[in-house]
Image (cartoon, rainbow, N blue to C red):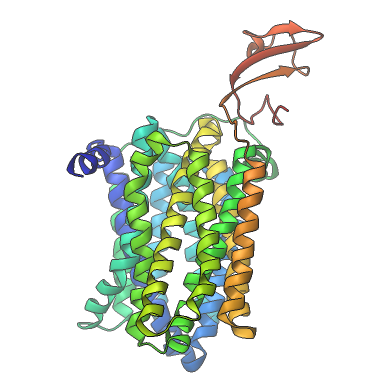
Length: 451
């Protein structure tokens, strides 16, 4: 285990990545504090209606992610990376500083949109930078694992940190902690020289905004990835939306047990993330992702088996189930970034990562309200069944869309390029077309996947 840990942490020897990872950690910590503070701010402004305020804020967050990310991805490739990331961090810090002073609910909604719009631009740009900092796939996989661990540890530790801070100061100071986190992130980013964005052909705003989505939906393995994103969203929504009601009303347990149940989900994700680098060295991405997606479906249908269990057995089974959902989600999301890196030229990383960010969050935007509505108008058993059916059908669709034989190099023909075009230097004429083989990606010379 020590050798494995040392191998995973070896990527931190790269100074640029070490600073970027530290920036991610402090920004995530600040975001975690803001999550707690936002709930308390909503309660101060709306009292018993705080849940509706938070639900609307969550919807605004997802809408910002889905709409802003593709547009930001089109612009990101034209701007200096370091300046863009630092500027977005400072925008988020400014919003966090202002939030404690609002007195109207609409002001909360406006500031949340600005905050999440900045995050929707920052996150894909950050993700697209890491492959250029760590070009080796093994190093990149370990960086993805560290990133997953950072998310999981944030979800476990930020609430405890917020609780400790609230013992000393009022909740408004949590927003100050959020701002400090974003400023620290900006300072860490500005302390290193980032690789420049790869040169891209100048495109109109519409073409640049839709390019990432067109690459995504034209690549079979990425169409499969989108299907499993829906599976993750369906299973994850059951955990994130309905845990509080399930634990408090169905099991009749204390409020603290809600945190324990969510922690079980985070622990499952963390353990899977730790195992993934070695697993991905031996097993193909497709096998890992699709089996993890099926595991999520099994976990949802296993919810039926919780009903006859009593007392402590029911509680223990729920914790195990939530841990399995966390593990399955981690095993889908971590290889997903490897697939993006493999499916585009470096110059298209910003638009492709932005497309994945938008499309995956569109799945959550669909599943969040569905999970809440089903639990409200039916019961948890029906909710498990419907979300399980979505997870299973999404897994089946992914298996069909993502070919079992999925080589990077493909033989294909060109009939739309001049014979002296530089792209045809290694091609041979064949029946009026030009045929050659190389690493195949959707780009300016290849607008559809070869059959």
